[in-house]
Image 1: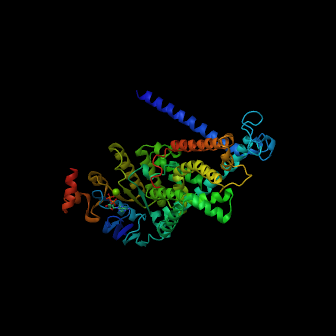
Image 2: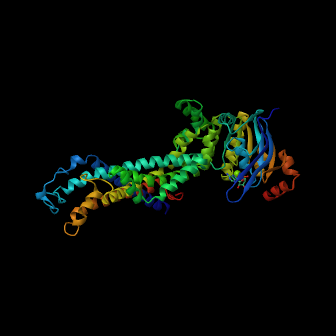
Image 3: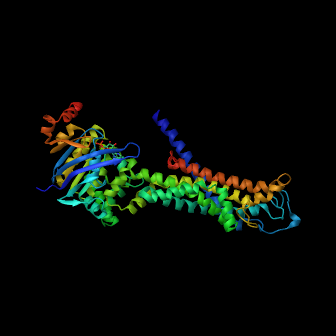
Length: 285
Length: 252
Ligand SMILES: Nc1ncnc2c1ncn2[C@@H]1O[C@H](COP(=O)(O)OP(=O)(O)O)[C@@H](O)[C@H]1O
Ligand SMILES: [Mg+2]
């Protein structure tokens, strides 16, 4: 009876392991594809040929062409570079800044904690879109400026998570024991606090990659992000908007690319959460 | 003889946002002499753990002073705290909670040694020796805390505390979380280490039978105050204080 249960559990574990590795492989594939995008395109993504404008999918151009006769497939592949890497850079930066501040606040407390938490509240009070508009008005368009606007509203999430985790960890006996072993504050944070909060923070970051891609694409769609002729999925969708009734592929291609890539990163985040066995994430948020 | 650790009028008040202040420890004065085992008993919430944390510098007292070998230690200063840690070490109640789940046993036991300037190799060798002394197989150094039983974990915790060659060992209910058989084994290990190393021991416990067999002297705490102090015989067999009598009756 027991042996059977164990076997089933073992099998379930193996299946989960395979699933995790498959998802991870898929995500890495997407990253590699984005990194070497220029070598993967069948055509020059920016070459215009008005004679070939708005070709339907199939034939020479697998996913059709846009209104300037540019190859959709090539533009989608090259667009991955902008979309994926700007989201990745943004998440990495926001995660690093937010976590560092959160750990400091949770560990030191006092006026620093108060000040940073008030700053968090202020940043969260801004609606992201309005801020993006303001930044675009001040600094001009471009995907970097859209990323700055998104970064300002999203670091507090990490700061709060890291702060809550740090405050909980600080009460643990193993931290007291490490103090007795002579660890300084810096050593406590480096050796014991950061490794123990890395799990939840990583899961949050993985989830955020998808969200950030969507939001960046959204801002680009509204004309607040990537500027033409840069191939970027959001602005490509925006290009196809008026043609949607008659030539739907111009909008559906980049739309599907966003959907699939976001799905891969969200599945990765879920699998990561399962694997790290993080049940109560977000309690402190 | 000069006490190795002396608490003079220690008080600790916790201020809470919701329900005012808690006086966890009120005006406790105790002396611990070299090689002596001093038991502290009291119901839960009587301030034993708070006193233990103050005695090893983890918690700054609200008032009162702490003396090590006759010299006062100011726990607010990092240098002096470090000096205190060289004399006083602690074994915690929950064996598992006192180990970082993301670090191996070997890392944790050797951490203090590396902090004191030993190389990784020296620390690892000494860690192995300590684990063996505490009755653990050497390969345990590579395992993670959750892969150990409660008893093994507590042995490792004792190894970690002894690694820094303290003169005083504080055991805050070090056997309470374990089942009876393992409790006996851990107690035997503590007794052996206490004797061979001539440790002074602050042994916090709520099992009066244990206290009677292990301690040279017993102090009884209630609501943060010391209510009785004396040899185990006098305190347990002829309690002077009403509360102590209650405590003994509750056990029998
Ligand atoms: N960090 C803390 N903050 C607030 N109150 C505390 C804290 N630690 C202990 N207390 C309170 O102090 C009292 C004594 O607790 P403790 O020293 O843990 O007792 P014991 O170890 O004898 O069970 C309890 O009422 C407890 O609620
Ligand atoms: Mg206690």
